[in-house]
Image 1 (tube, helix red, strand yellow):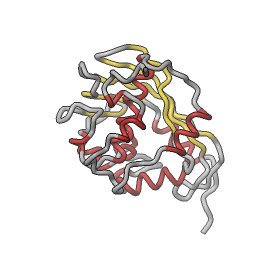
Image 2 (cartoon, rainbow, N blue to C red):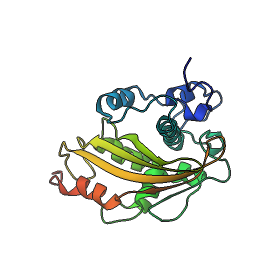
Image 3 (cartoon, rainbow, N blue to C red):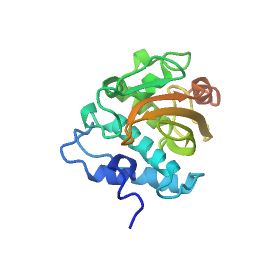
Image 4 (cartoon, helix red, strand yellow):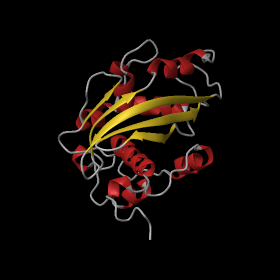
Length: 218
């Protein structure tokens, strides 16, 4: 018997969460297909967390949250968060609700306005398409290590992808761009996220996308 079967659904494997989608309002009308992402992750991941371990549980929880934030348009249907109380912030900035994430998207809330990205000029869809185009094979995520357990879970993570598509007017370099970060998630007794703070270098990420290649000619 699997060690995770007795755990809440939202900290089981993301594919198990997707199977239980009766009545869910998906952004494009259908549940997302992670088959390609899962295949690339298996090939490129650096960590193998033991099933049922704290690392594996936290990894699954964040992947469920990422899926829900990206594709579930009714925040009340998110399983991974404490409904009505959840808040998210990045680098000590403004805290956002689940409803704001649904409307604006995580890219806009994480990156905000800077020299290389204008969140106030992007929608959820335009920001998603912009980075999906830059990373057509996916911008993957994995938990590296949990350094402190519940109720305030502190964990290190990495985000990476191959810059093989244009970013705005900038040509792809074929480089693997990696973002290393740390997050602090306050969780409830049943392992739902009450709040989460992310810390990572947004400027370094955007500079990689804009300084490596020449502008696309027109």
